[in-house]
Image (cartoon, rainbow, N blue to C red; front, side, top):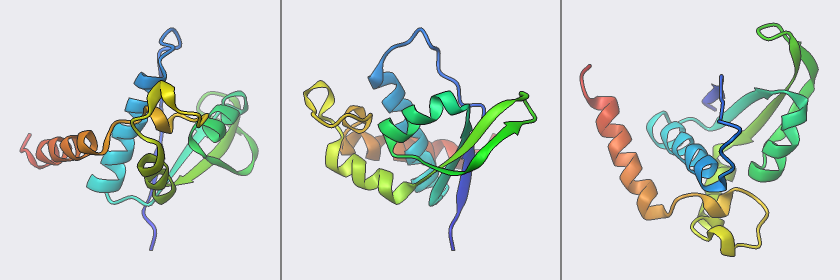
Length: 130
């Protein structure tokens, strides 16, 4: 009864050192996947040297073992997070930004009112004929 999604080709400009920009990107991904696509789980495949960041900052869990990703011929680990867990963290911490004691990206996520506005905009875009 789960609906899963894999985020692929996720890239962020390494010269942008903004927690707000990264948190906003992940919050929009969360809104789209949970509210529009009704997904329950996200999977990402990352280089092991990046896995700690996703675990620490968003709560991803490593599943499976280290493998070689044939697309890039590099080591990779598979990470997983339930969108319900993300929803709980967003409800608990979002909008606190630099005032937060929580050492994660969730305090930098958008407010709940911004989330509702983005949800409506994404749905309108998804329902618009191409």
